[in-house]
Amino acid sequence: MSELLLDRPLGDLASAIPGATAVFHRHHLDFCCGGRQSLRAAAAGRGEDPAAVAAELAELQRQPAAGERDWRQARAGELIDHILVRFHERHRAQLPELIRLANKVETVHADSADCPRGLTNHLEAMQQDLLNHMLKEEQILFPLLRHGSAAFVPGPIAMMRDEHDLHGAALARMVELAGGLTPPEGACTTWRALIAGLQVLREDLMQHIHLENNVLFEGQTVEVASAVPARQSGCCGSCGGGRG
Image (tube, rainbow, N blue to C red; front, side, top):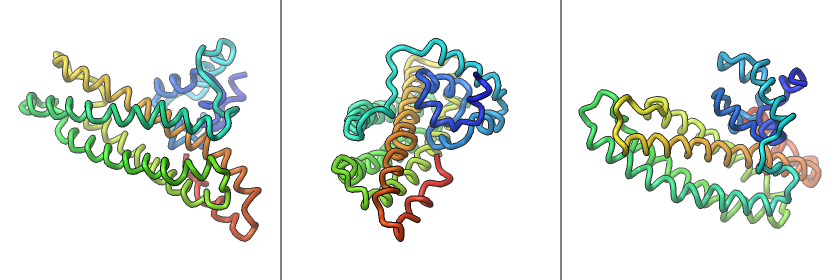
């Protein structure tokens, strides 16, 4: 069974197998922005054994994780409601507290060699970019998707995919600034709380991007391709071809 999983895209596996995202986090595989890579290619690129990862996923298929939903079966409006509550509202609450914690750690531990210098500024930039991105989704793209305005969807989806790639790069830089999300030996409670919060933000934002790129937008791509006149369909086919 596991051999059949090797050439499937990470985004497809993340959508189809409850618990797969935890496996991908554990093996540092990018299933959101890199969701169109096959498991074989992605694992090999990270120096992981593709067969071993596939075996873990196959075991999940035999004993699926409880409480996880296959959002591919949901209507677009229902998935959008979930994204708004589970991710948009949560990110708006997460980042101000993480910025506060990062600023305190950088101030108190400025003399430490392990001090995450520049992390506060980076999180502030992430917050601004993410707030702007979510506002565009809430005011432009999501209303279009709710009302089935297929002819107007390809451009906004392409823009959101591009911005998702930037969010992925920002997450990678965040991890770098935060010492790989591992607190140094003897780190204070605030520092440990900061690292724990950054880990949650990373997992949440990756799941957020995955649900949009690999579920919500993919479903719209199929619908748009059949709804847009042939002379316009090139946009839909080219705007997300190499992204995840």
